[in-house]
Image 1 (cartoon, rainbow, N blue to C red):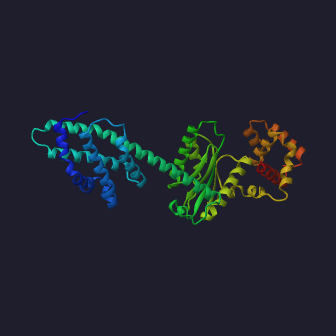
Image 2: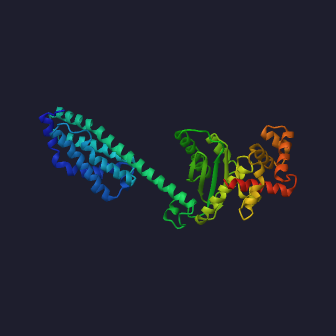
Length: 393
């Protein structure tokens, strides 16, 4: 929109005051904004002041030469500065307020140099000023948010890499980031298993995992570091904390699935890898032994854990169940029977069978494998065979 000669003449009288206006904004007007006073002096006096001078001169040039330019071409400097402020961590509200206050200060400067009879010219300039402001603010906000999203994505990737390396034994205990993440002291390592997760798209899975993460953070009152997927995952809880008994229930309510949790404390970062291996093994053992979802610690499966350790005899013990390997219903009955303390009625109820059917299946296992489930030795052999057999696959 072409401006009148009177409007251009009025704007030209502000040209000599550009540096003064920039100093006033950066050292007076912006100081009233919450958080601005804490910024370093060099940022105020150099970068922000330069941006202010660029903005004022850009407006004055537009007044002088209103020929249209390619959309957004005049916003390059604003975008660059917005990206810098995002990287430095300046709050977006503070950045946008500086632009809003800058427009107001410029309007006051135009008003102060206006002479009687130039009211119409002043209105033209204010109209042009307000017309250009949304484009600048939009470019600033868009660039800031894009930069913050990119930075946060990079930070999350670095955090996941560090946590994964710590769990897998690839991060030295003295790593510089461990202190920032509160992982330079004791921690609690969890292994999570979601029972029978449904086949879902990635969006639904991410939503479920966000809910699980929220429950973990709220339960322990700290930022919990989790590596989760649709089936479960591993978690590091900073500090000398204990998992509450109802943690699986809380996670089940948030995820809509039955959740199995294994918890192992680690004295320090050097012990996290071993604790993660132990927690993962506890989770596997509880599944193999048919234990219901819930919170499990090493003491809960101490015998089973010991029996599942591999040595030169392991393959022979695992082979004891080879005769019934093609009978999954017999293996499931055995697993359920052991999980229910060899109570035939409880086993029958869990499997939806008649107790006599359970007896018949157990008799077939005894007959085909030679394992006497009525004896302590036979029970121990059956548990060990199930555990060792599962670990082979």
